[in-house]
Image (cartoon, rainbow, N blue to C red):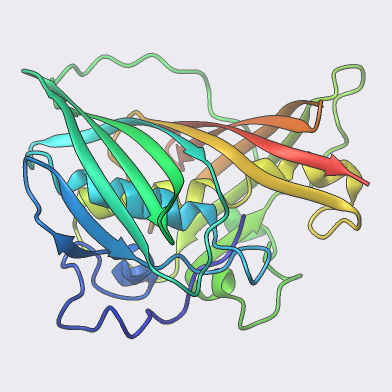
Length: 298
């Protein structure tokens, strides 16, 4: 559920690096993939490495989401942008071995395109993702709720302070968490608010921006359910992503402060469900997220 690799494996050298993802998260290195077999409108296979998450032996789910999205993006026209993705995590990935992403072209319509991307490691499927892209329609009318009223990031402390100084997340993301309130009495709902942006400026590439936002979206969402148990490192509690859905409402730059409003609404039967929204400092709702996770308390 956390972490960004500081260095790309030797298998992806500078000459082979995808121009979509050219450097450390400020340059996109952590979500880079390289072509393995054919590429283009008929699909293809690309390869990447997913860095560790909370457990050193398991990859961070957000890296797999971002790489799968990057693989799907390679098969659509440049005038189409992602508007939604739905993924299932089937098996844990190892950060020590490459992951192959195969994309199938499901449909290309007049305005929308659908792709199916599957991540495979050691000949076993580990993630499957449906991704939908669309052409811009130029409708300037928007309806949305009001942005949550929270302190400005400049007034908040480092939300990664509990992590070692060389932790990948601290090297790649600035994280400012709003002091947590108690769960809503009688409802069981837990709210969590944090400002997030990349360390360094990203290239002017909307495709990269969307992949980075998918990457970021997995970090603090499901762990919101851990607050009653002593998050971030509760003893005797297991948490692992089961699925992940995301809707991209507007183009956005993750290298500028975004408020990630997370809420955990239900837990039981060994599972927990969380929702989240990304907001700009100007109050624009730019993306919505939903995620179910395994939650076991010993």
